[in-house]
Image 1 (spheres, rainbow, N blue to C red):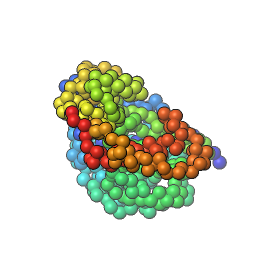
Image 2 (image 1 turned 135 degrees about the vertical axis):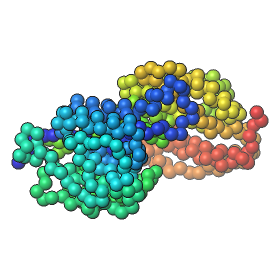
Image 3 (image 1 turned 180 degrees about the vertical axis):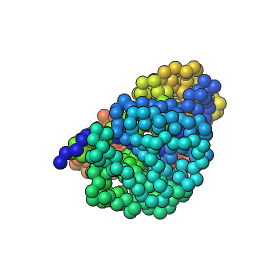
Image 4 (image 1 turned 45 degrees about the vertical axis):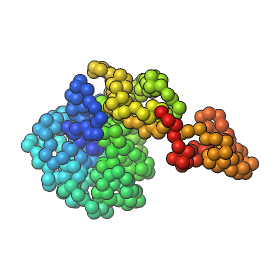
Length: 410
């Protein structure tokens, strides 16, 4: 028997009032923008929930950045929950390692439309259909961390009630041992997909990922990137569930400040103004790809071999300042650093030199005649596979023999 279609918002790792980290430099006008970024992203999340007329909101952990959040963050959260309550939207919060249930110290009283899942054990709440409270819309299961370090798996505690309608599980943890994050509440993907739930609302991993679509196993990523490794669009998921229980999941970008890493190979480039011109074009494209009024923080990484390797960090800082917006504006672009990984140019290799002899041996290699038939696609420069292979071997040889070949004098 079909049910009523509904929709919900899934967010995680809000880290409200969390500072940015690892910045190379910050202009005075940019400081308040960064200070308010996580709270502005949260305000956008509330707008999204209201505009989409969602039936419920779930937060999969790390709503706060630490166990003693600022009063500013507490008030923002309380007021946001109350605003959702005014629209009849219940909120479900499973605490994570940054905001563990038993250790979190707060100074406010939560609105009645908030459900905080208990520490260390799974509970579930049946959400009634607002149009017909006698009939359930869905069931939400969740568990909170009692303390910051949870090394046991929580997945096996999730047991779906046979009588439950469409069911969602909310869990903060590391599914599949993903690198770059503590292995808290570890689980294998099959531990989740075999437990009968329709949707797993996950948190803890700060990059957006859909691990499965049947059932849905989703990391929305964090709400606002706070350092260069948290790059790209950040936001939340809105799931649209039809009358038969099939879900369509849509990502919404919400972060007012987006990190980008721009890598540029300047091999052979001898003039700094030419590098600046190329960076300017790349930055214009990066800024143009931002959403609406979102600002862009860019970290530039220069690679290759160039006489410009002799430039000092302060020289690159001058270029970063020249390329950055100098005042706030919608869609600003700010280069927080230019990191040089440049090597000095190699000395020319004589015809009988080590590199030339090594490449001659490469030329003698007999590539299978059908290689280009198996892989007929040229690269960006239109070269067939055989030439691509030779070029890659040449690049590797140059990298490996660079020290032996020596470098050009400046």
